[in-house]
Image 1 (tube, rainbow, N blue to C red):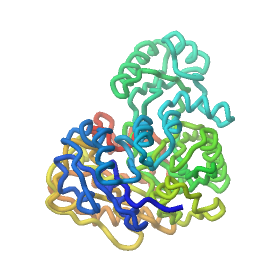
Image 2 (cartoon, helix red, strand yellow):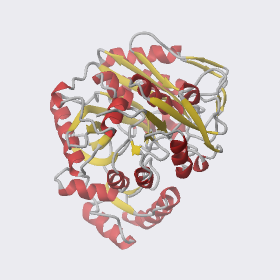
Image 3 (cartoon, helix red, strand yellow):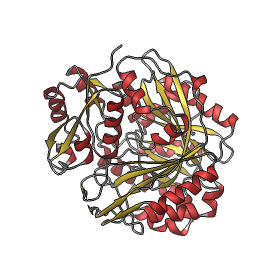
Amino acid sequence: MALFKKILIANRGEIAVRIIRACKELGIKAVAVFSDIEREALHVRYADEAICIGPANSAQSYMNIPAILSAADVTDSEAIHPGYGFLSENPHFTEACATSGITFIGPTAENIRIGGDKAKARQVMKRRGIPVVPGSDGPLLSEEAAFKTAKKIGFPVLFKASAGGGGRGMRVVREEQELEQAFHMAQREALAAFGNGELYVEKYLPSIRHIEVQIIADAKGDVIHLGERDCSIQRRHQKLIEESPSPISTEKFRKRIGELAIRAAKAMKYRNVGTIEFIVDQEQNIYFMEVNTRVQVEHPVTEELTDVDIIKEQIRIAAGMPLSYKQSQIKAVGHAIECRINAEDPDKFIPSPGRITFYLPPGGPGVRVDSAAYAGWLVPPHYDSMIAKLIVHGKTREEAIARMKRALDEFRIEGIKTTIPFHKKIFDHPDFIKGNFNTDFLEKISIGKACNGHSASVNGDVEKS
């Protein structure tokens, strides 16, 4: 089967640059779209063609379905890659692409609908015998239903938004008398954030790891996994550092969680690239959490370990080609870690947009930087604050940590504040070095105290955790 001749990238920033690079290596023309304040953006400069789709407000540009489809039409693009965030998990966009005769490079609309409904995804997995955290079988229809389920599974419990992620619409309830207020607060927050106030409830498990598995599936139903990533270093449920393999992983654990991920993908007839996310308790019990129906920010961690180009695989599968690999061919070598470098005040964790006056990324063996930043670029205040991903690869976790510390020291960004100093502190912390951490790590250490009162995302173009 032939690949596409031209692909439109319905995104911006580093992920747009990443997709353009993959297109060029495949001999495919890349079309960039941009808002009117991003005419000098790197993805615009790198693309073969570029077209303005609206003003800075993402609702009028990067999330404007008619404008994006029109751009694809006038440029004769055969396919659209959505990247992550924005329209990447919008089933209506997927269907609109199909109606317009354009291939959507990603999973099916039904995959996205199941992934976007956390309560439904739990039901699907539970029916297939995949372990889920004890909780409600579906969305809670009333406060009374919430109370009944909470009493059954025992306090503490956790309310979650069925349509959400990233910590929005989430409330821990430790005692019975807290339930009513927490239920209504979570419901209002979910409705405001996602336009859907449906909640479900789970048993609250303390001291957990957040571990995800990268999967790739073709149209024939063949599925492989590329190993796990540990995403437990988080601020308000937003990932900051990702690594693979997990410090707690053994061959037995890796085989078990990989098999569960493939079963989960097959349970929902998954197609293309995605991530099956799990929580792991202190006894290494594994529970399905959610499925992310897109390429994720941290995909380079897996690419560095396996030498699989995940973006190229997305494009090939969308073109109707079979998987390029069998499971037996996937070999993870060494250890990889990624730091998300945000344009934020590292003490207050509030956005720090502005003009970059000096930019010098690190280099040397085992260092990769995915970014759309450059000296003279004006970091806009309208989008998510992540401006770079720093990825390192070493023979061992110890070498990867040492390499990351060296790379963070080399990374120079002036004119704005960034989270580089924060990452340096994490990599000097003895518990992190030992691999002794979980999702509440930053709440327990002094350098994390400032993290919990602010959210740096402005328009949410970066994925939800």
